[in-house]
Amino acid sequence: MPIVAKRFSRSNEEEIGLRRGPWTLEEDTQLIHYIACHGEGRWNMLAKCAGLKRTGKSCRLRWLNYLKPDIKRGNLTPQEQLLILELHSKWGNRWSKIAQHLPGRTDNEIKNYWRTRVQKQARQLNIESNSKRFLDAVRCFWMPRLLQKMEQTTTAATAAAAVDTAIMNSQNSTVPSMPSPSPSPNKMLHNPNHPTEISSCVTSPNTSSNSMKISQPPEISEDQKSPPAFGNTFYNNPFLNDNCYYLDSGIYDLEDMTQPPMSATRTNDDFTLSDCQMAESHWVGNEVADTLWNIDELWQFR
DNA sequence: AAGGTATTCAACCGCATTAGT
DNA sequence: CACTAATGCGGTTGAATACCT
Image (cartoon, rainbow, N blue to C red; front, side):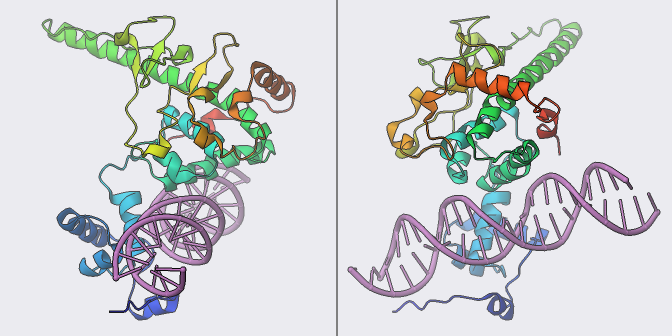
């Protein structure tokens, strides 16, 4: 039987009663229920069979970006922000590829984050967001501040946990106190032997009990093996000053390197101490100060 | 309190790619 | 190989909300 192409214009869609715009609770329920019973895929048919007056495309988008159970909601953590910055510097606007490395986050969410937060900063600094200058600024200002933020968060969490533990201990002396896992993010080193761990190079260089476990990224196809989860690719080079970070390009496979970063003519391999220091002195020495590079604005809660 | 402006993010659009026939 | 439908992706839009004056 010949397949007849049916392409609906906007007016056609309206004629046949297809809905547009925000989804109602009822539609969401319908979609969730149908997928729970029959699974996802074949979206056009799914839309019809589920009795939804939506295009298959719309159903797919709604499911993938909003309804899917493993969708993580709420603010991006500093770790996630760092990872986005890092991966974007490597892959550019490959949102879905970037999203594959952030479990529970959608390409749409990441794209929105980039456009609203990152590009906004670029605008304020009067730089092209895909320029090398901006990349340098990201590396020398934004990333260290995110790491600082992570450290503060960790410290606060540890303190809170300590208080909780003390309370618990005072209430019930039989409960053993937990060891406090508090590696300093600023002291993170890439550990080639444990690709999913960040080891603390100062507090406990070789004990796994004191290293920060990073959750495994979702399964990724063979051609996307690199980069691994956050933590492997960023680290504080012990030979550099404390605030300067760069990418560990050595772990990227060659295939991926055929796609250059959006702006740089050099690869990440070439990002050196002098680059970082030059960039830093340039930025610090110029009008671009912390007040402009407002991490608190980036680190905002919804 | 009201009106204007800025920001956010869900949803849409169009194009590219993939899979099936 | 050609054609088509389905799917995936990145760019863009616009309604809702937050913020400012």
